[in-house]
View 1: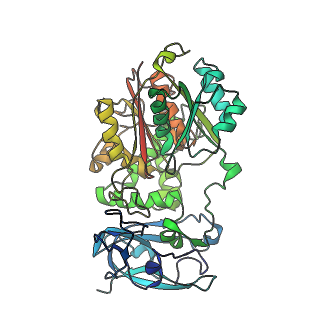
View 2: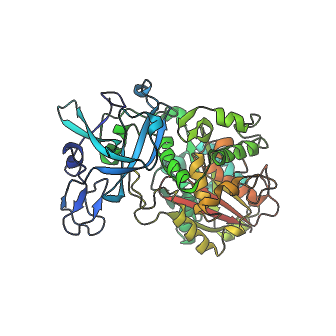
View 3: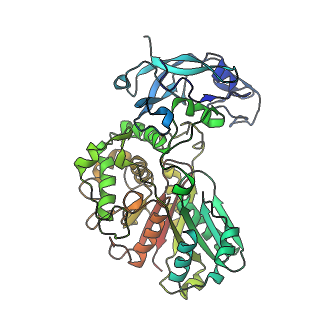
Amino acid sequence: MSVLPEDWALPAPNAITTAWFTSGTIAVQTCEACGARQHPPEELCHRCGSMAFTYPALSGRGTLHSYTVAHYAVNRALAEHVPYAVVLVSLDDAPELRVVGNMPGVPIEDIRIGMAVEAIWEERHADDGAVILLPQWQPASG
Amino acid sequence: MACTAIRRAVADAGLELSDVDGFTSYMDRNEPVRMSAALGVGALNFTAQTFGGGGNGAAAAVTLADAAISAGYAETIVVFRALAQGQFHRYGQAGRPRRTRGAGAFTAPYGMLSAAQICAMQTMRFMHDHGVTQDSLAEIVLTCFEHAQRNPRAIRYGTPLTREEYHASRWIAEPFHLYDCCPENDGAAAIVVTTKERARDCAKAPVPIVAAAHGLAHRDGVAAFGEANFPTAHHRHVGAKLWERAGCGPQDIQVAQFYENFTGPVLMAIAEMGFCEPGELNDFVADGNIRWPDGGLPINTAGGNLGEGYIHGFGNVVEAVRQVRGESTCQVADVELSLSVSGPGYAPGSAVLFGRG
């Protein structure tokens, strides 16, 4: 199912990225003081400078904004996995925010800019036992 | 290589190494402290590199030298870039990340690792938004290769490319074929920036810096494709500043060098610098308009990164100087203003405009 090797790179979540990588929701960093949203998460709010955030779950629905198909394996470990597509999704309930992902199980030729997509989560286990729920995308169910 | 390029640039200017009192560069490993000792330059008064990743610093490094000299911190600064990728990197390879932190955590786990892939993601959307064709990407490559055929120093000298060969070449990261991606090689280049007074006494006619700019628009530095203006080459802002400072506009430019990491960002930069609207790009680059000798705006007249060779875009700065001096192998007649635009696709962008002394 996974587009890349099973033991490929995983995020190392920290205080501001744990919600995104482990909650199983599209948990967008939202400033507690002024409500500004930002992705990727940062240590401070770009609008008001606050360092207090919530991570409310958005709908997980999005629109495919762009993509590329990688044919050249920039690392030897990917040699058996090319070509693979990397997509960029704008979130329907926060269109100014864009999220990078793959579309596991979806034929590359079916990937189109503008297609409706929804988030799914790939459960991965890091060497240190950490469980990562990696956001991925599939065509919207309608 | 860095020392050789610097020695030759200083000699070409008719100066002595002991006249040099500063260095600027971008992303370079050659420490000015070590360089100054190795070259035996005079007392060092100024050193700086630009922030930000990639060849976007090429024109910006000239800006730094101009700023330091204008402010009186130094008198004669060498702007240089030297690459020894064979020694320090594996060409075209990325390391294998295990656990990723920072912005990389949002891209590397998905196999988004290389500059080609990053610029491909930007270009795919740009082409979609503005109807830019694959043939327009090809036009950038074919122009660079054609110009390289007249430049005996060019890596592609003697190896022309046809449109058919371009389209038949393998994909690297769609929409980029092999030839959309600039090859990497070792090399070094340098220019000397000094005061107006000193330049008058140099061996060759001085080439004034009319204006320079580097920077990026509000929130265009957000990582992982979060730029406020995605997809952007980061030159909308740079262009506005450059033209404002220069007191002229794209319509006044006779020849330009556009850093080609990949073809797509060149097209984005041409539009963002104001040469045409994004929707007009297919027409702007067609019918030889960007080719020497008959085009309205010949670009990358030495062959650029794609055809001449990759010195992280500093070759495109040197060629802009050659055009004013009348030393290009694709020399445009009576050049009054010569533009070099650096590193589109990676923030910040930069550009420098040279004029006639």
